[in-house]
Length: 256
Length: 256
Image (cartoon, rainbow over all chains, first blue to last red; front, side, top):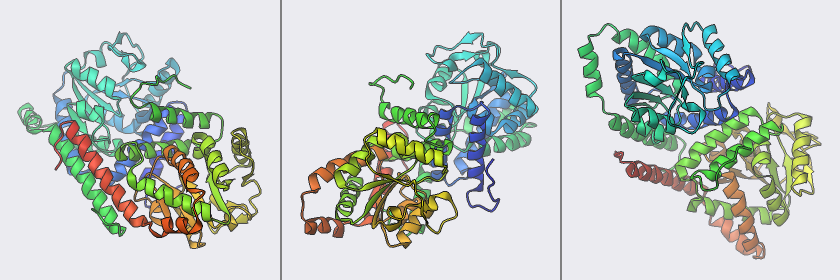
């Protein structure tokens, strides 16, 4: 990796970029995944590169759903495998959810590499290699495991495409997305839309799970009942606007 | 390239992405360039994937500067070489500006490949191979040709980094940037900041040059005098906000 000084103002963002380029170099991330990473960076810049309050609310609701689930699955793709393998393994551990590899640009070799990569980070069970069921979609994200995503009641889909998110919701699953675009089809379709950088989101969720896992089911259900996804999206748009306004004013640009 | 149906709602954006991935495959674009492309895509989404009025005003002012210049140079990097080699050659032809290859991740092989790529699109003169002068910068974008960027009075820098943009302005050159982030250091530093997708911007500039090249110098100077770069940036921020509001409302999300 390129040597980036720790005091660089954009250290986290540059390290993230290096990790994803490295993912391409070792064959687990697609080149299209780099473009997706860049889109995320721009939206992260707009929310101020921090977890805003509405995102933390979504993350707590997501944790409540996962803790109450019968068969929760964390879907892993080439970008999340490169960026946050450790955090996905940690979240699976602490919640009891299982990991399943699911790729848009799928090949047996890539599924295998990502599985091994997750195992090297301490993952125990990694689903996705069987691919014995299909969702009704025209691309390879259709391929899922019967005892994994196919029969899951709650699916966490970080960095998902809109098609599959919609399909999973139609199958009456609870879908938790992590996507920085507040108006993407994924964000608008998911049950719980986490609009946050995937590194911060998963790291918060691991912490929130530790705080929440000893709570009663009733108290977790209260968290879910109080949650309003449309309000989270509205609040995020408001935060973006305020943040952009502040940035403009700091730079002496008139806000009209 | 992947086969993308022409009636796909995001056809232009997907074709652009394929072109840039292809640039990496043939060794003219860096992997980091793919991330930069993604950032641009997100900002383009925010301005509505069209040339807004303030961008067209900046493009006309840019053309006036180029037509009045003594030694105008169009700086070419790995992303623009992959995306818009034909349009850069067309703009050089119609304005009389010359092309110069200037790379952040520089190697002789890449400079050579990009030069040949531009020649294959009809470019006559391509500078940048000599690299006989340095700007006062710590990275490879410092390396320039003495009779090119070093002595230019007007430099067009599509998809530039902030450092070099600032340096060129300090050298009292007129710098025209093309950058979709309305608050990037490049946009805030340039003399004329074109906040538009590079394909649309160059294609408009070729057309505007045809309209403007027979005008008198006085009338071109009037275009430059009437131009207000801070107003262009303010107006762009306003357009982004309006566009985001419309998108939200179309999707039934409350705008607060």
